[in-house]
Length: 101
Image (tube, rainbow, N blue to C red):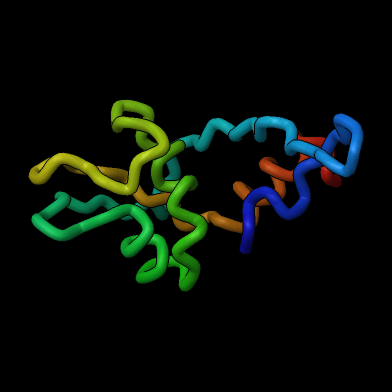
């Protein structure tokens, strides 16, 4: 899933266009959340592929952990991270706040 596939575009003339910057939903804590301690070689995209079956959903894990460096696959070794499992609702919120739905 390409997170930009549904984001509105704006044409700037002569065939050039750009995507609006997407807005990301806040992700509340849930009793179904998983927690991991990051080890050497772990990356958010690999974890998203393992948990969600889609590496492009790494941004969900990143947004659920605002204390992490944002827009990076890499997390310091030994850091505990939260992985939300309610992906369907998160993706619906993403679409709603970006005017897709």
